[in-house]
Image (cartoon, rainbow, N blue to C red; front, side):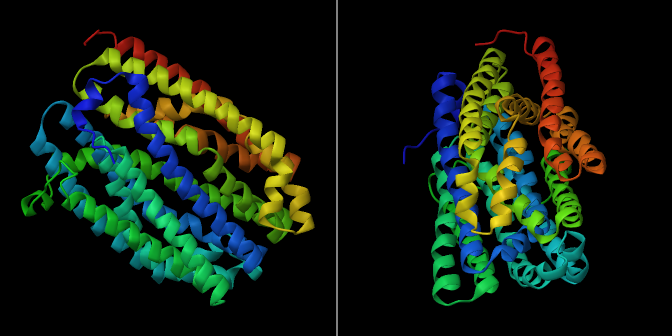
Length: 450
C-alpha cells in the first residue's frame, strides 16, 4: 500500500488527487454496501422476507448510535485536515485524543439507554406484528457491538484526514468480508437464524476496530497521541461538536425517516410494504457508492487546502468533484431504470414484493443524476468548518423537504405518494444547495493563492 503524506493534499494535481482519494473511498463503500446487500439476500433467502423487515426496523437505532462515532470523526477530521494544512501538529493530536474520549463516553451511554427501552423502541420504529420478535433478537446483539462500530467510523474519518485513503478503504473492507463469512457459517451452516445474523454483524465490528487500532499504533499514522491528549480541551470539543452535529443531525433525520416510512408503509400495506422499502433502502446504500466515494475523497482535499489558504485549489476541487459525481450518478440512474425487476428478484421470490418494488425503486432513484451537487455542496461547508450552513444544507434534503412531503402526499396519493416524495425532495434540496454554494464561492474563495 503506497504511503501518501498529508502534504500531498496541498500540491498534487486536483484531478489526480481526487481519484486517489475517491477510488479507495468508493471501493470501501462498495464493499461495505455489498456486505449489507448480500447480508440482506442471505437473510431473505435463508430466514425469510419478514427477517429483512426486522433488520430494517433495527437499523435506525443502531445507525444513530454508530453515527455518534461518525459525527465525532467527521467533525474532528475537519479540524485535523485544516490543522495539518496550517502545520499545527499539536492541535491535530489534541483533537484526535478528544475524539476517542468523546466517542467512548457517548456511545456506551446510548447503548445502555437503548437496552433499557428495548421494548418501546422496536415497535416505535415499525417492529409490529410478526416483525417484533425477530427484530428484538437482532437488536439486542447488534447493540452490544455498536460502540466498536462507532470507534471504527470515527477512526476511519481520521485516517482519511491524514491523506491515507487506502488504509481507510481496508478498514471498511475487513469487517464486510468478515461479516459475510460469518453469515454463511452462523446462518446457513449452524442454522442460528436471526441470532446468527446478529452475531456475525457484531463480530465484524470488532474485526474493524482491531485494524483501526493497529493503524494508529503503526508507523503509517502521523498522529501519535499520548495520555494528555485524551483530556478534554473545551474549545476543540466545542468545534468537534458543532461540526459533528451536522453529521449526527443528518443521521438522526435518517433514523426519523426510517421510523416514519416503516410506520406509514405498514399502515398502507403491512409487512410486504415495509419489506419493499427495506430492499430499496439497501439499494440506496449500495448503488450510490461511487457518488458517496467522491464526496468522501473531496472532504480532506477541500479541508487541507482551505486551511492552507489555497483557495484556487479549493474551487478546483469543488468543480472536479461535482463533475465526477454527476457522471457517476448518471450511470447509477441508467442501471436502476434498466434493471429494477432483475435487482428485486435477487432478494426474494415473493410475488407481491417482486410486483410492487421495481416501480417504487425507479421513483426513489429518479433524481440521482442531480443529487451529486447537493452532496458535494453540503460536504464543502463541513470540510471548511462552517457548521451552520453545513447543518442547514445537510438537513435540507430529508429534514426540510422529504419528511413534510412524506407526511402529506400519501394522504392524497396513497403509497405512490411515499415514493414520489424522494425525487421531489432531491430536486428542491439540490436547487437550494446550488444557490448557497455558488454564493459562497463568489464571496469567500475569490483570492487566488497558489
